[in-house]
Image 1 (tube, rainbow, N blue to C red):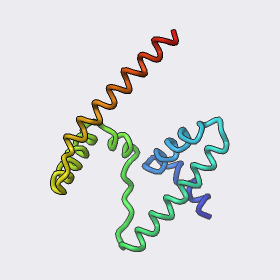
Image 2 (tube, rainbow, N blue to C red; image 1 turned 180 degrees about the vertical axis):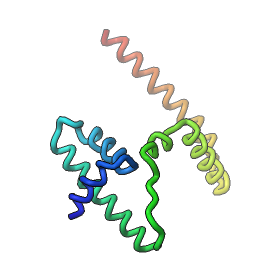
Image 3 (cartoon, helix red, strand yellow; image 1 turned 90 degrees about the vertical axis):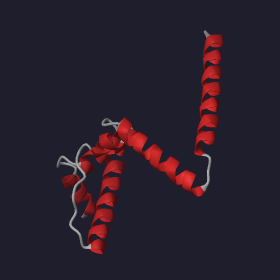
Length: 122
């Protein structure tokens, strides 16, 4: 029954359809029938979680919109998330900026060595 509801839910433009499309791509693309089946199972699970939250809280479900995932991955949203994490780490006493500097240096080192490897191969 949930699988049929999931097939119906992905026909309507919204967050569930966007999630289905993302999952199908991640599981192997449109040409892979197994990817569609796995994605529809995930959508059915999402519907079950939505139903549980609606019953638990008593508030009606509001769709987050078809552009939910693109909005979530926008540069402004990522910057706001980074600032929130930085503030939370500072409140807990962590030196987030020191970790970030070390991480950037490590990433530069790996990038440099990856370039050297490709230069040696060619």
